[in-house]
Length: 368
Ligand code: UD1
Image (cartoon, rainbow, N blue to C red; front, side):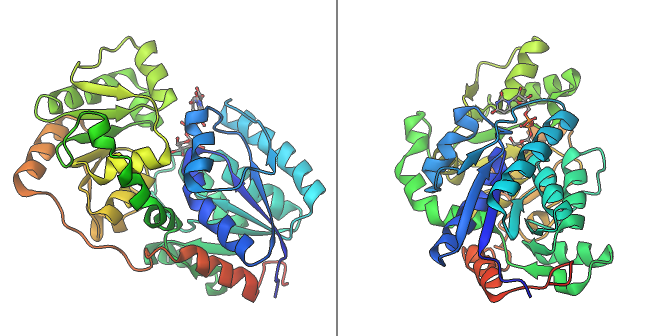
């Protein structure tokens, strides 16, 4: 059994921060020696720094500054720089989260060095090998001693791949720990009012998946549909830098009614999302956050690695089909949309379960 006292937690890109913050705080509260490493995959203040303040997360102890590049180059930079960081700190456990390039890179470094790896959000599968995140998820799970799953479907996916039971630990959804902890504060920002919107009377859009934004015809068709939605209800679109760049490259005109705003901080976005009528997105995490908030979500993808949000929550998988957007919005306006329920263990206590596991000791693949 390993009972690690020195633990490195890794963040790299925006969706990592809200999953790792509660774990860092819970492990520190138990008196463990926790090092926080930021790979720098996301580096714009609005994609990164603002989250540390919003989530009450300590500043990173190391910043690897890998920046943007091709997947291979970005991953390679993390491999080299994180390896050096492990030489310096000598952690006994490395905790990574989600499915971004920084996640697989750090998991691989640790596994090759014989350091135990814990994967937050293990077991999710979209079964879409064209998604870079699917490759990252599967490879990270394969390197991980502790597979920290958010829901029962994650456990089942891992079992079906032949993973032994002792590696699978259902801890629940860490992103929802952050949501529950910060929702009240987010609502005090009065985001809708700040943007001149009526609570419950607007649509929020986010789009950044390569499959939606890197193909100009697809991006143009989706933006045209979103433009049509804005004729029915105000639309706010906090825009990812990648998407903004693609719109400019392809010279696409966005309808006047669609309000493009800079990427928002965690609290601002949570405040805006919690009070919208409909969320329109291709994000992974937002499918879960809307389920936790009871807000109807239309997901502009052909598949999801988070099917529980469809089966139990408020999510509808619309497909990446522009023509379905307006009819789906009209239907929610007519019916109020899916009610849904909150999945088991999305209770705000997941980080405590991770801390219990780490402090109690666990079996590793090296037989420790
Ligand atoms: C990454 C993750 C994706 C996650 C998303 C959330 C991978 C494979 N993808 O995608 O799973 O949903 O983050 O945002 O890891 N850029 C900036 N400033 C930044 C970061 C990026 O301008 O701070 C621009 C750059 O032009 C860059 C592009 O966005 O080339 C893409 O960034 P990158 O981190 O490579 O991937 P994301 O699309 O953000």
